[in-house]
Length: 116
Image (cartoon, rainbow, N blue to C red; front, side):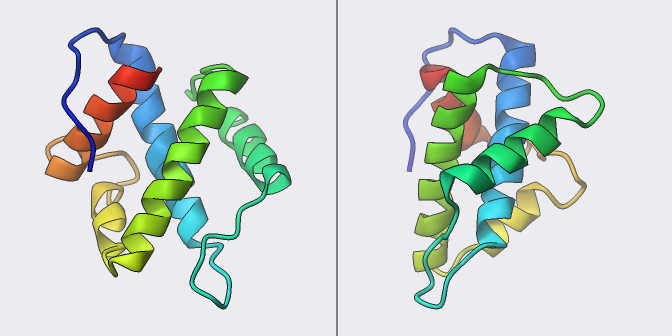
């Protein structure tokens, strides 16, 4: 779904971005409407962001980057809903942290390295 990393990445920022991406993608999957579409609006995203940043050890990537990650995560979650593969997102976050050994997590990490 995503291409390869350019190799230019800030490891702590990238790790925080990957965590935020998958946590937000899971949030999206918890908010699906009757037509099987992700139903997350700006206010819901803002509330999620505030709650996420209020937890210990969470990195503030800045509004611009976090909004971009949210948009990517919504698209990602919708794609996995359409393909009936939402379980893959859950597998990545099974331990509460992204399992970076899984191909899907590596793919997302490489994509995020290009956009943040």
